[in-house]
Image (cartoon, rainbow, N blue to C red; front, side):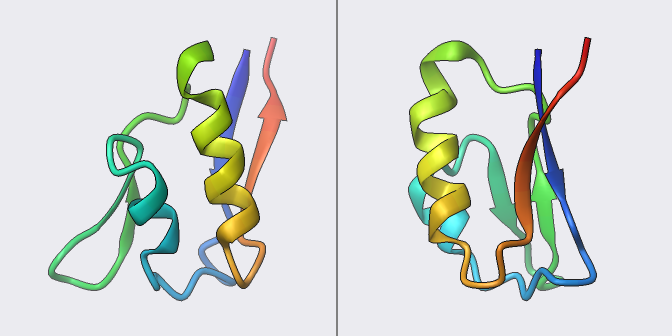
Length: 66
């Protein structure tokens, strides 16, 4: 199982990931990024990987969790 991990020390909450897949990432009115689902489904994985690539700070990663 893959888990989304965000390095919040790097994250600027610019929302590019949210533009790619808003059902996973959300930047709220407090200007902080929230991960709505840390365990994306297989059919969301392509968009999650696109969101990871779109992050200018490389603050998002996927880790294996068994």
